[in-house]
Image 1 (tube, rainbow, N blue to C red):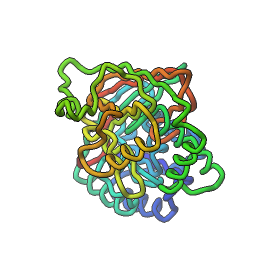
Image 2 (tube, one colour):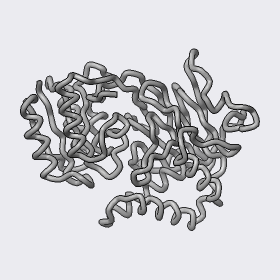
Image 3 (cartoon, rainbow, N blue to C red):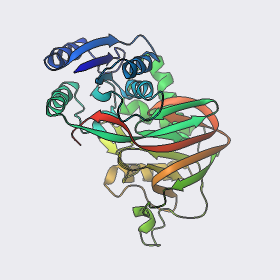
Image 4 (cartoon, rainbow, N blue to C red):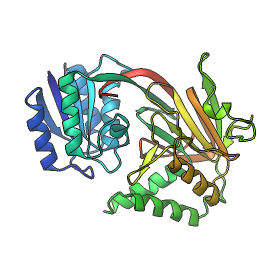
Length: 332
């Protein structure tokens, strides 16, 4: 088996020790080449090269941004279940994708789990999301968002570029700072155009008693739109935030929309995400499951993010679900 190990040395928890342990362990079963990325976009180039040169498995050692780049390289020509398989060892601060695949947050423990999966031949196909905006198009693995969450992601990125480490505290401070600047008063309107497959069942939220009114009104205008391809949406420290409790790599895209972004509503919804499996509910919540297409149109524009990377402000973004898009090394 031929493998390519893509290492992001700038990722939060990536160390030379972890890299050396991983290379030594992999070498027993895989003819592995190790490449250390030199900057943004390099991991995507390596993924593309791997898809064209007979590599069997690409192992990404880094955070969710590194994984996203590798995926976009592997799938540069479209969904490819026969592309090199993707394996992930968490080396970032949150590592949502790796943990959604069942790996431990610890890179050392995850290395052992990955080796066991490789030796046992455990892999699976996962569905992914694809986004188009302006003249750009990219894949995402676990989430996308328009509105407040993207604005906070942008603020966190700016803080990190100044040398601050990523943390749950930094995320919370950035969110509260954004509210102090008046996000909740300067309304951003995001219109949602949603499509489901012909055999898609109604979501759990739609099937609840009418008194709950979790979803379902003809009005599809929100101020915050969060799209999930996996569970959870993200983590607050070690605590999972379940924005879309039915989200799965085996179904289409799920969506959580907030009609109003008042601080009180946001705190209540965040508490519901943390509380258990039911997820967000109430009159302020739009919750949709297993969508095939989502078009988000902002007035005038709104911040946009994918897989925790801020991508600027845009007037329109279209997201589509692609089942069985990529093979990953995982037991779940």
